[in-house]
Image (cartoon, rainbow, N blue to C red; front, side, top):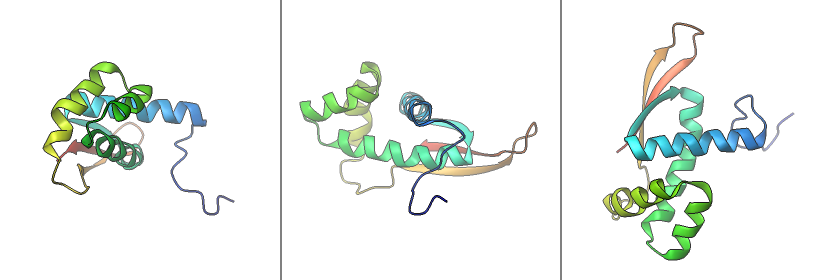
Amino acid sequence: MRKKNKGRILSRPKHQREALLRTLATSLFLHGKIKTTEAKAKELRIVAEKFITRAKDNKISNRRILSKSLSSKTVKNLMDQIAPQYKDRQGGYTRMIKMGPRKSDGANMSIIELV
């Protein structure tokens, strides 16, 4: 029983799940919006908002912490273009739009985008 365990497992081991969320966050920051399953989008929202909150404080230490998880191109885009847009915002940097089930397997799809 998974009592008091937060987060979704997404049918993957921990290292694969973390890698998946990192690549989804990278795609979100580079393209502005992505289409994925509803469960992945809900988990991505948590990760992406933590990255943006850290990027809002433009210090070298935060840039280095973000560089551990994201590529240098993504960190540069996040720190220089995305984070300054949310300087006055306290949270809620992403929007999730539900699209309905996918034809092939019936998974609920959604679009997640930066507000």
